[in-house]
Length: 279
Image (cartoon, rainbow, N blue to C red; front, side):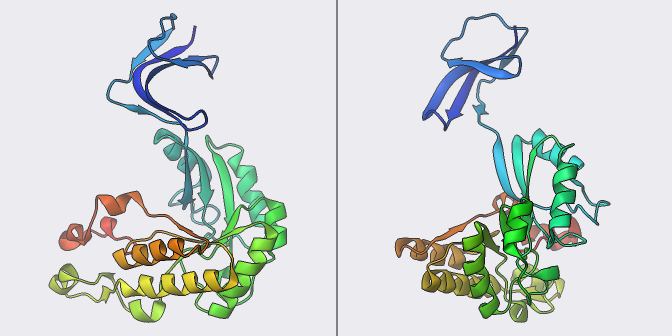
């Protein structure tokens, strides 16, 4: 008889419905979504006060597989994602080896067959994340990549990034940019501010992100090519993105959940578990 979810706040984007409703699931498939379902079920879960959503796609994860599986791997990361309601993920390419060849993409997709979520590989913009020679975007696309990024590092050379925007677009791949100006953050340990001064450590100034974000917007606007800005963490970057959108520049962006709950105040105890980059 299945599973009945009662009294939840249902968000059904596919059918344009949002409101209080019940959901009847039979044989693992949604059989009915309506207010006050009276059919019997093997199990009933009271979802009062809860939102019932479609599976979430997290487009920026680090499963550290291949090469760094002491931190995470595709299977354990997939299990954690599923536990949080995430049913699809895009894996960043700063692994070992980096995702700059069809062979590494195949490794990821083969291992993803044992994962509990759908895994979409993101390939590298440049070979080895070195910021110099572009990868073969056509081959990465054929292998199964959905986007390219040098995430974990910025593409420092504007000419290389400009070429990447054009070539990736025609290969059917979105470019995801890690916006950081290395010369500004050189030697920085944590966010530049009162806490960095108090702890006596070098700070990483927010303008590092702002400068790089501005460059990517200018490139995208001039070339009329799309770009996606990863892990936005500053007010100025957000302002620049809003202005770009008003002028029709094809730029999208994302931010991270921990930016809403954690600040550098957590670092007063020198607990490195709270240290993130960015900011």
